[in-house]
Amino acid sequence: MENDFLRSVSSRAARRNQHQQTKDSEGGLLYGGKLSREYTLRTIWKKGFIRLILTGGIIWMLLILTVLLFHIWSCQSSLSFFAALCNKDSKVFGMLNTMGLVTPPHRCSIPVADDPNKIAIPKKWTPDKLVKRLSYITEDNSATNGSQSSPLFGGHQTWQQREESFKIKPTMKVHCGFMRGGGEEMDPKDIKYVKKCRFVVATGIFDAYDAPHQPSNISKLSESLFCFLMVVDEVSLDFIKNNVTVREDTDGGQWVGIWRLILLKYQPYDEPRRNGKVPKILTHRLFPQAQYSIWIDGKMELIVDPLLLLERYLWRGKHTFAIAQHKHHRNVYEEADANKRRKRYARPLIDLHMKIYRYEGMEPWSPRKSTLSDVPEGAIIIREHTALNNLFSCLWFNEVHLFTPRDQLSFGYVVYRLGDVFKFFMFPNCEYNAIFTLHPHNREHSSKVEWAKTMEELKKHPELIESRGGLGLWTPYPGNLDLVVLPPVARTSKAG
Image (cartoon, rainbow, N blue to C red; front, top):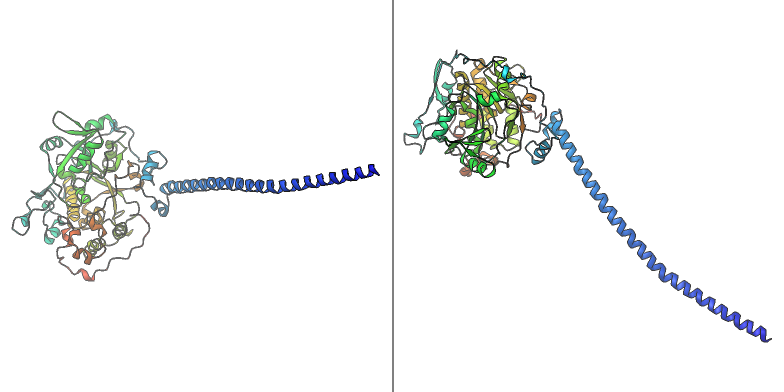
């Protein structure tokens, strides 16, 4: 009995211990399980958050890469719609171009000669057959009769004088800028230097809008034959001196690499873009001893030997004036529409400019015209300074002086007014893009007048209007422009 009792007590104690151990075990599992699950959840959340950040970063990088690749592809595309999406003035394009990832669109090889030393340079000027003697009006009569406070650089040309200037005669005297007291004065030491220049490569920087770019692939013969002249205003000269090395020769001439700096004091216009048209169009007036000139815009780096350019675009085809075809437009009215969309000048003044041309018979371009296009790519102009070419340049500049500073709108009009008298070579745009490397501007240029949307806004705010240029837009026109309807424009490209 005693043994049975002991076994019973021992059995109950064992069951109690087992039950307690079970309870402890269950409690421990419950407490430990909560901690385990919370730890697991926190770990999952942390890993998930890190994965989310990594995934988002990868997607963002892929998106940037996709956009960058599309930008490169659009800049290289031969399709006008996609090529128009490429902003060649952007810093992104400039960076990609510097890295060699993009090249100017529609670039093709130029059929230039292989060796500049083998080129036969003409010994004589092309004879002047139609205009044998050309002289220039230098006194602004309207400025001395008490009606004007000071002379204008381009003069106060009347509508009648403008009309007479398009009538070709053996002896002609026309407005051509550089009115006495009108500005753009050159230093005597520079005047002395340019007198020896028969072959000229010219460029210009105004309002510190661009940085100097040294030409490349220049032969020793061209270095000795050409004067490389960079025309600047005082603002740009200060900018250049503060950012690049400027050396001075024994005669006081200032140089940046191969470029001789030519300072023009007293800028004649309120609008820097209009000031830049002076050396571009009136190259023969700045450098009167030059027989040949090649103009390139300040944002461009010349990469073809200039002697090869003269042989390709002038001498080979017996031309005296060469300019590239515009990439997008042939119709001047379409170019005007693009200028309005891109706010290149006041929209109502561009319309007024075009209404005058339309009133005077300027038709939209069509294949029936004798010219390849009415709209040039004016960043490169290659010419021999014959009397007829000089007359054309004067008439072209007079239109820029009278109306808007958008010279591409005026070029085709002057060609139209001179008819078949003025012959020129318009070469393909793809060759134009192969002549230079394009660099972005230092900054975006803007002037107050560009933002005016209506004529009423301009009249209400006269401070928006240029005071020394474009006065033909505010001088009563001898014709009824109210009935003029501009031709409809089919926008074939986004770019201007």
